[in-house]
Length: 362
Image 1 (spheres, rainbow, N blue to C red):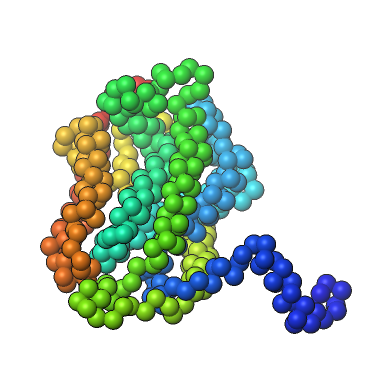
Image 2: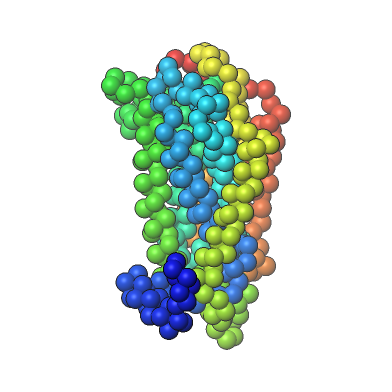
């Protein structure tokens, strides 16, 4: 029915839709996808994407009140929490969605590994996914620093000293790189411009390759085709239905994050005390924390490089034709050992007393 109360005939609606579709090509979203694409395991990437959209929207609101200067950064966070319209709730949603997205990105990576969905011709998309994992970690790290409480100050101290260890190539992380803008301001720029720009580029490439290669078939169907069976059925649903389901999970994520923001608001630690270390990093960085205890600050550069390097090699080492876990027992066992080790490192990091690793001057 039109705004004037006049009923618009169905044929006229069809013509209007055809006119819109002619210009925007929306019907192209109805291309076929496998039915299993709508299962939770295959929709984790889409959930993560909608989480990034929520983070962008809440981040824009928070940026209206944040001041990335050493002397005023923490006070501006206090202003957001206590004075800014809906500031505490928006900040809480931003915090909790970031944690949920980190979890869904890791689960998405795990699902791809278990189902062997990184195999030819999807090797490049696996590497792009690792890039998105790195961007996600970078966003959480810089967001931690921006609080400019004791935890943020210590995180920045690690950032500066890691830059010093990198020598000439770590100049951007140095506090002496420029006197015109404090390093906190540069990390703020990384958080709101540089990392989102890199992430956007990687997401576009990721989506284009998913469209090019299609959503991977179920491992059992892929193995049956290798053994000479019938080709797996590619239809069963449409991308439009898939996108609606992703959006539904995105709204559910927003609802959960809002409830958590109301009952467990994002915290803020005390003012930074130079020369002390009393905090531990967020949970996604805890697996690296024990190595810093054992081997010192250089481990924070070496261990993540080894981990990402090993992950990057996965599709080039596991080159067999089969994708079912039962036909890739060695790789699944190796992945399980790594996952258990990471969980063990997190537990170890949680129960140990924080140790001093940095010099304290920035």
